[in-house]
Image (cartoon, rainbow, N blue to C red; front, side, top):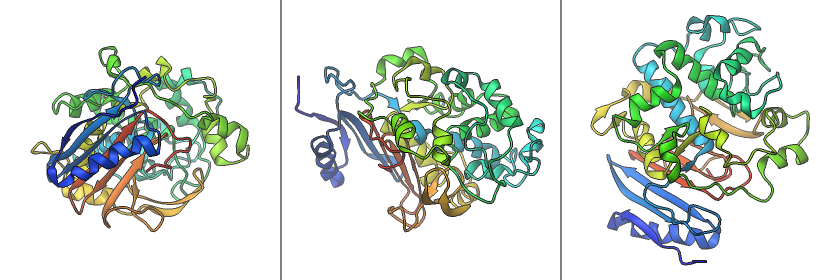
Length: 365
C-alpha cells in the first residue's frame, strides 16, 4: 500500500502555502482522495488534487477524477433556475401554479416561486412512502409533491428541502424550457463551456468516478438510531430509507438529484455568481439577478437541520453562525464534506471535493 501523498496540479506562486495545507489535510483528517480549486478574477489560481480514488488506495486521484458532491449540487440546480429568472421567464414573486397549474391544490395555490429557492415552501419531505427506486421516476415524485399539503404555511418558516428542492425547481425548469434539469444543464453549461460536471452520470464518465467512502456510522444509520422519530430531520431523511443503499450503488447514476464533479468544475460553476455573472467572457446572469440571489430570504432556525441559517436564493449567506471571507459571500455544501464558497466581494469561488465522507450534513462547509 502506498502512503505517500503526491499533490499535483497548478498553484499560483502567491498561494503556494495552500498546497502544503491541502497535503496536511490528508495526514490530519485521514483524507483518501480530494481536489481543491480557487477561481479568482476570472482564472484559476489553485487547481490541485491528490490521494486515491478508491478505499484500497490502489488508484490515484487524477486530474479528471470526479466524485458525487451531494447537496453542493443544489447550487448548480439553483443557477439553472436563476437563468430563467434572468431571462424574464420565471418570476420569483409569482405563484408556482402560474407555471405548474396542477400544483395549485392542497394549500399551495399561493405558494411563491422564491419559496422553492429558500427552503420555505413547507415541502421538505414526502408524506407518501417512497423507495430509492422511486427517485428515478421523476413523474411519480412530481405527482406526489403536486398533491401534497405543506407541512407549514409556505413562506413562514424554513426547513431544509434535502431532496425535494431538486424536483420542485427542476420541474419549473422543465415546465418553462421543456427540458429536464439534466438536459438543461448539459446544453447551457457542460457542453458549451466544457465543464466536467454531470447531473446523473452517463456511462462514458463512470470510469473517472471516485468511490465514496462512507463513515463507519452512516448518516442514515444515525437518523434511524439516534434521532427523535417525531423530528423533521427524521421525517425528511428516513423516507426513502437508505440504510441498505450504498453511496456507490449504480442507482445514483440515474437520479437527477445527484451531481458529480471535481473542485475545478464546481469552482468554475460557482464563479458565475462570484464573478458578476460571467463565465469565460460570456454573461450568464445579470448583476441584478445575482444581487437578488444574495438577498436575505430568511434568517431563522431551520426546522430540519436544527440550526440557525441565513438563506438567500438557493444557498446560505454569511452570518455570525457561518464564518465566511467577506460580507457578500454565499455558500453551500454536501453530505460528507464537499463544499462551494462564492465570495462576491473578491470575485472568488472556492471548491473542495473529496471521497472520504464525514457523517453530518454541512459539517464541513
